[in-house]
Image (cartoon, rainbow, N blue to C red; front, side):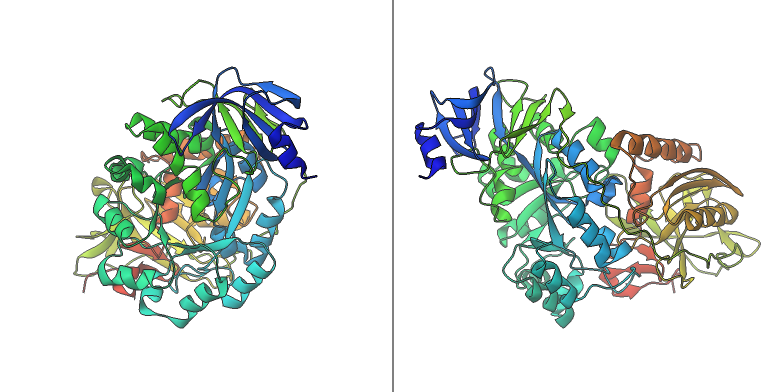
Length: 573
C-alpha cells in the first residue's frame, strides 16, 4: 500500500497534522483555512478533519512555504555552514543555493569538499554551485585554478547541483574555449550568471552560452532588458549592496514578472542575519514598499524552486517536502515575524530557538601558505609623476566602483594619501603562493583619516588587502595578517590595535554567530576610530579587489578594469 496516498485519503493517521492553519496559497493568492497532514517528511494532504500521531495547533496563524535564497556566499558571513544554517533557519529559511567560489579560491578543491561535508544534516538544505571562475579572471591570483576537469569531478561526485556564477563575462562573450568548456562540462543543470552592465549584442552573446540568470542588475533599464531577453533576475539585497527597492518597480508594474524574479542575498554578514534577518527581511522590505505579499512570497519560494529545478519544494501542496514556516500573525504583514519552522515535517525552530540537527565538527583544511614576503615601507612608496592619477571611487550601497582621475597629493616627491579629499592608499599582497607580488593604488570614499584597515577577505582570490592613511600603518597591518594566516586587522603606526583571526581559509571562523558578531563589531568600532564612517567597511574593502565588476579595481597585479581589457596604469598617460 502506498502509505503517503493512504495518509492523504485520511485512511491512516498522518505523522503530523498542523491544525487551524491559514495556508498561504501562492497560486490563488489567498489564505486557505485548512489542516496540513504530513507523512514521512512530505505533505500528504491539505483540507479538514485530518488526524495525526502528533498534532500541532497553528491557532489561525499564516503558514508559508519554507523560503529559499537563490544566491548566497556563505563564506561572507564568516561562519561555518552549520552556524549559518542554524541562524538562517530562525528566520524561516529552508533552502539556500550557495556559491562556494570564495573558499574554492582560498583553499582549492579541498575548500569545496569541506563545505559539502559540513552542510549535511542541517536544518537548512544547502545546494552548492560548481565554482566556475577560480580564479574569477586572469587578473587575480587564487590558491589554485579549477579547470573544466575539476568542475566535471564536482558534478560526478554529487557535490554540486548547478553551475556557480560565470563571472568572467568577457570570455563568455568572446567565445573563449576555456569558459565555454566549463559551461559544457556542467551539463544539463541550471547555469547561473554574472553580467554587470552587459547589454545589446554582448548580452545576446552571453546568453547564447545557455547561462540564463543574473544578480548584478543595478538599474531598472538593465533589469528590463535582461528580463526581456529571457534571463531570470536575481534581485540582490545583502548587507552592503541594496538593489531590491531600486528594481522592485519591475515587479510592481507587472506582477507576472515575479515568475522570473527572485530576491537573493549574494553577500551578507553575521550581524545582518542576527539583527535584521534573512529572507524574512526581504519580505518585510517588499511588503513595506507596497508589493502584494503573495507576489513577494513567490519571489522567495516558488520562483527560485522553479529556476533551480527543485520541483519538490517552493509551495505547500500534496507530494512536496514538508518545509514550512508558521508566522506570528494571521497574515503576511510588515512585521513578518516567524513563530516556528518545520523542516521535512520536523520542527526545527520554536520560541526563537533552533533545535540542533547536526553537531558534528567538520574540521576545515587550514591555510597552507604562510606569507613571508611582506613588502617594506620603501617598496610601497609611489614616486610622483607630472600627471593626473587614477583613483578607485567607492559609492556607498553599490558594488560598482568608478574610475576617478585626480591630481595627486605629493610630499617629498612621493604620492601620499589626501585626507581633505578622502583618498587613502590601498595595497593588495598575494598570499596563496608567497610570491611577494603586490599592487598599490589609491581609493576615495572610505573615510580613513589615520592608521589602516586590512583583511584576507578580498573577493574573489582573497589575497591580503589593506587601505590606510600612511605607509607604516599599512605595513603593520600586512604583517598582522601574515602572522595570523588571515583575518581582519586595524593598525595605527607600528601598533596592531585590533584583530580577528579567520582560520578557515582566511575567510571563516569556528565561533558561534553571536561571537562572530561581537568580533566584527569590535573591528568596525576600531575602524571607526580611524575615521571610517561607511557601513560594513570590511565588506566594502573586500569588493575593491573583485576584478569582474566595473570599473577600476585592484589586485596583486595592480589596477585592473575588466571592461578595458586588463591591467591599468596608476597615472593617466
